[in-house]
Image 1 (cartoon, one colour):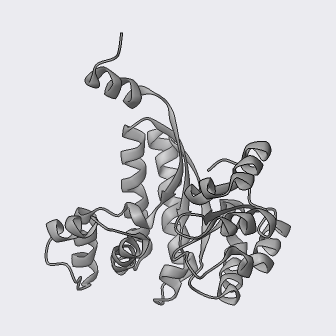
Image 2 (image 1 turned 60 degrees about the vertical axis):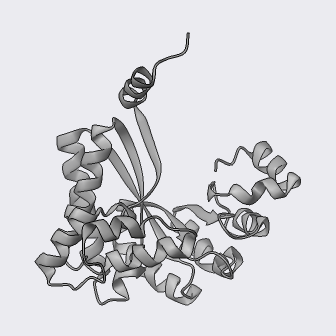
Image 3 (image 1 turned 90 degrees about the horizontal axis):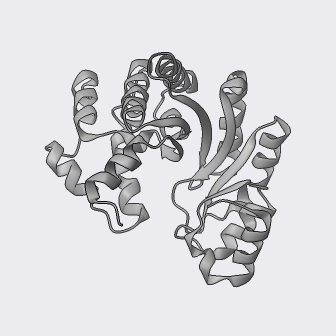
Length: 246
């Protein structure tokens, strides 16, 4: 007998879950975006929350990133990053997420003059409060923006080292096409030398070759997205043999 829609929904809701792919900045919902914009006196290019919701009906990765980076403009102070992270973790806990591995993009903020410390202190404080109060554990994965240079990624890695114990890994995200993983080999080598795990967005819009590079050059233990692997049977076989999750 098949389960009814409501029964299935309740079953899924009650099931303990792990969230392995969440961009904390991308979790910013229109209500909080406008509240932070008002608090920080930031002018948005959206006239209303409904206009923001319509903007999220995007057609490709870049269309999403345009909204994503616009939203980051409202994040200026430690409390903003706390409120952002707290809102996500509260929602995740309500859906019975027990563990969340959270991507964050410090370069989206340091490039606007917001310090690395401001970003990570707000996020970390919310994570600790959520674990104590909501019973959800979480970990941070620092992502390098691939549309920026590998040298800038290395500066970001060095900024993160005083907070090394709060970060479990590094990743690679943002605009994929034309920004191959191999360009970031040196900074990923250094990250691994500091004991950090490595993951990377690859094969989302970029070719299967980017997945090969993420495996061979960045030594990743997980591919984020990786949907274009299906175009390369040898790659699919390798992912299967090495048990690399997508």
